[in-house]
Length: 207
Image 1: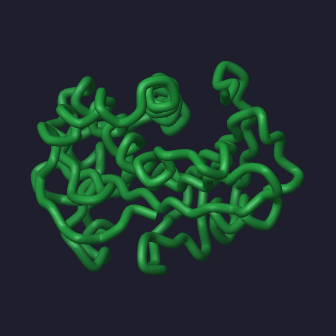
Image 2: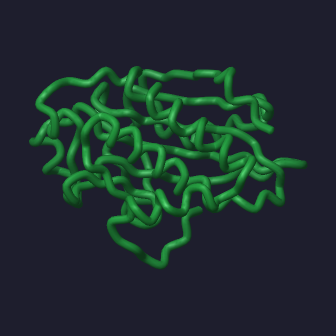
């Protein structure tokens, strides 16, 4: 069982990609703890299908959550959806009508506000889960327009600036509670939430 109460934080001002860093250094990270790697800026941020994730400095959340699970874990492919649910629920508590675009993008008003990239590292006895998430927090309209799909941010929606650390803390609190439930009870407790939050479907795999 993952010990989620004691999270190790590793922070960078600038990095190519938080996911890339974790994959390079996974063997040096504690397999019994959750590690959260964050950066103020990514120079080579990636989304699913190796798409570029626009990562301007000090404006958004760029984070990777890393932890280990048993190799034959039945819920590996559901972890990104659980993070998407956690993110959507966190945003809803803040008053935003967040939805999930299959499999694990988060939308508000039909525009993308968060994306998740799940990768893995093969270890001797376990699988390292490399769970990257980007959330548009303080991006303004002129930068949002440069993204190759409709996008929004918390600042654009609310008209105010958000604290990045506090917002990330709220997300981690929501996700770690959900991860504990997933480990203990599997996917069934999340099905009703996923169905209620789903904005559109597709045939893509999540990892």
